[in-house]
Image (cartoon, rainbow, N blue to C red):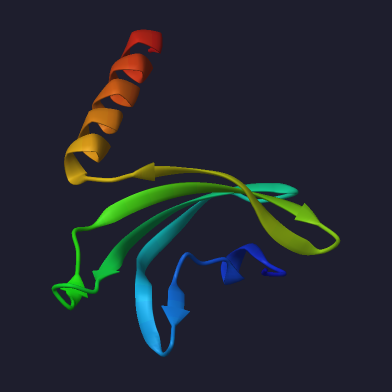
Length: 96
């Protein structure tokens, strides 16, 4: 667990191998409830290389000066990310 939003990460290491490699992150909101979107890749043990780029949106709650993940949504492909962007843009354009 992390004490600050900047310390939060999805990067994960197991036996000296980074199995989830964080490529980037953007903090969407800070405070008692914080939201972060991450760009990452998973290690594929069979091919011994990192897989395609993925994205995840994580929501954290700060309790006792520590952040705990409360929910997440994984975007598993560039196509899914593009579709999500399209829907959000459509809705934003409707409200303009």
